[in-house]
Length: 508
Image (cartoon, rainbow, N blue to C red; front, side, top):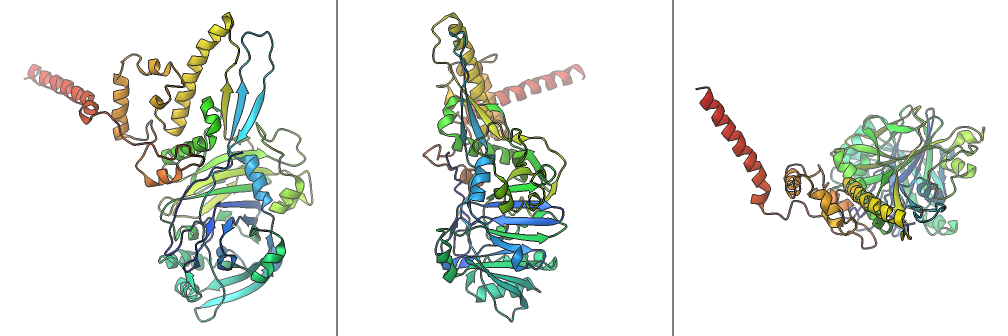
């Protein structure tokens, strides 16, 4: 499996940072990194269990975090869990590629074979964190616990200015606009769940990483607070949300939920660059949907006792009973046969395009879905009459595969003429080369209509890939001279002018 990494940089006052549902700052001068933004949300009635991943790298004494919560959490409501829960459900639900092999046209029989490849979920980059207690800022310390390697404080505040001052006076570098994003949570009477590392306990855990933190609380609102995470962001952030419910698919209620394209037949050259392909495909969908859409990447009934298929193809063993329980699926402890429905959502959000926290609902929709892309390898032996006919069909199929690939990623078809020899012919049909000139004009006025290219710096920031694959963003615009691009438009305007003159002459 190849890990996809989006290189996304966001700056705080003194540090690089990236956040998901909480507000992350750092002690002045600390350089902290968090490679992934992932959360697991288990929803059962009004009960929510939220597990937050910490792929933290840096000096643990500088780690701290704060998340708004709707009620005072008791010690029993807070746990630390093993990181492998995230690894398991990410790999199982990630957008995937399936390989098929054409039947040998010259043989009477040949069994089909297939292999599976998986692109792990779009990973993310860069986060930073928060601090501890004090007293004369209208900030109240309501509870304190030590759980595993973490010291935890539950705070309440009367005004954001006091909380902001307390943070700064405790040595934390916070964004200048922190007060305005803190105040709505204070107005809603939310508490602040503050975490830092207990230096005495961290070495005794036996882990070389900070384990995910899990909290359970009751609230009538099924939501994920993301506004705090945008306080220090200058560009977009990516978040993968894994949800488990008793009913069906989870959808966002205050932003549109869209499925990622699936079942598309793509060229075989994608085999070695599936990571790059999926990033570009996601970028295209993100831009096409106005940058304010939540994307569905997986939805399936994963009840442990259910013997049916839970993916197509499957790329590993599904989560087991104990892993569901560790993730917070509490209803299985009373009834191991109870339904568990798993939804994976991918959100790319920014302060301007996602001004509200994410609000969710569990729907009765139990339709199975996954983002999957199909590669079909050609037959290797074609030296027969049927083989010649097969080769003709294969060339046409390659054209379709390239067109589908370019539709998904926004790449130019001309770049892939080496793969499909008939691609040039298909481009030059009917109107000869005028078709490509027309397309260039369309691209000038509507860059997203075909190419998906854009001058949006966020697109290029998200398009970076690993393994040396397509690290340079495609150039926007066209290589043709401007007069050639405007020539067809001028011809149309001239024809319209002549008709207008003729009309006036006839009616005078």
